[in-house]
Image (tube, rainbow, N blue to C red; front, side, top):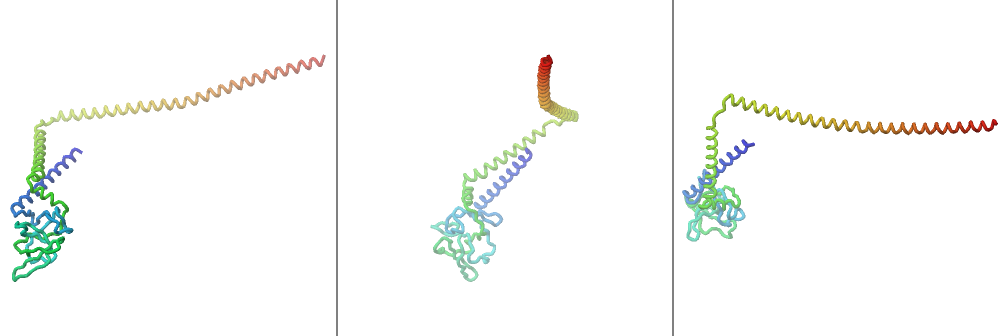
Length: 271
């Protein structure tokens, strides 16, 4: 069981380290890529508004993929792109409603699913970040936004990493202490085995003695249980014999009296 917990702790520690590494990679890649985190061409992004409800909502996490060929885009695709809102260049994710061809170039009209009208400005190829893969995880975008803050990075990345390295340091120190212990000689090992055997035999002897005592007690109880009914039967037979003897004696006395009276009557009649 101890070995199992040690293995489970090791696995958990490495999982935490891997997650911390991935989150760190995502956070730092977003800093280097205009605020867009990228991992193997995929970009996890948090939804900031409800303009695409009910497809996805504010606070959800969506996965966007980079596009190698913009001509593969078609109407009804959902794309993430840069746009100007209130004088600021921000990211937006809307659905393509129309593709406009202009010679060798093209642009795209977009609209949010929850918006009554389409976006004012078309989206040009240079503004497109990627296409939505269809994957969205409710409310996980809030966690991603938190991780991008200093507090979130400290709580979710630095603290788990510190715990991981302290755990590994503890394991290293324990292994070092164990390696410093002197090895047992053959005589010491033999003595340990001998004591273990003696302790085992003594324990077995105690168990055998306890079982013997218990068996004797059971036998005694059984003997008592047999003797008591036999004694009761003997007493009953003795009482019955006594009663029978008394009855016979009384009957004999009565018969003797009857004979004597009859003899007296005969003698009187003879006279």
